[in-house]
Image (cartoon, rainbow over all chains, first blue to last red; front, side, top):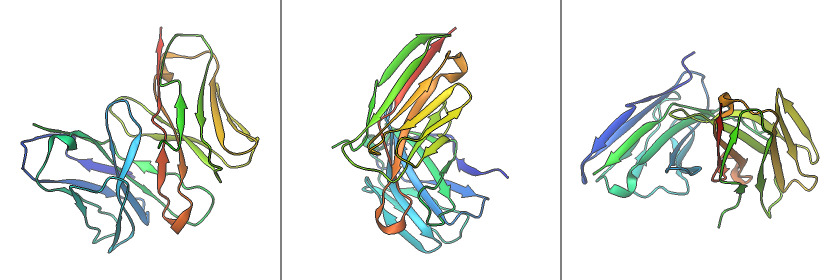
Length: 115
Length: 113
């Protein structure tokens, strides 16, 4: 199992450009998440999905969009990139079974710079 | 408002020293997770604590969940350079069965040889 894979690893965008960050998991997890992490900080939730065709906003959704057409893939779309979106982006997944806690498995991250 | 406060934010110690990092809140949690993140990688789960007063050990790492389930600590004995990284505590937001994690801001640990 590759786990959670993300592409690209690094990207530099100009202000106003758009891009899609790819995320794929091969663990058949039902729930998937996108976080951003600013330097020296914890992670903040952007969007999440509880299954194919179902997505919802997290804490910091502005400037982003997601879709989930399959169980495996959860791409994150940035429209009209802004310097405030410079960050490291992490995709994660979990098998949600309704218990007290669920381990999330993270990808290696995409480092994005907007200039 | 930071729901989870981690302290200290930064810690730089010599190999062989002991250390404790803290994760505090005014809220009660059903469980708390600890993750470690190495530079250039995603976080990896170390442990989940569920019961108030629970103590879990992972080699030289000891995790404790407060009796009132509002706080947790991570103690590392005889730190090694391989322990260097960002330590994050997180709780699962309880409403709506979403599995959403709320993270503290993290403790950056540097262990010098």
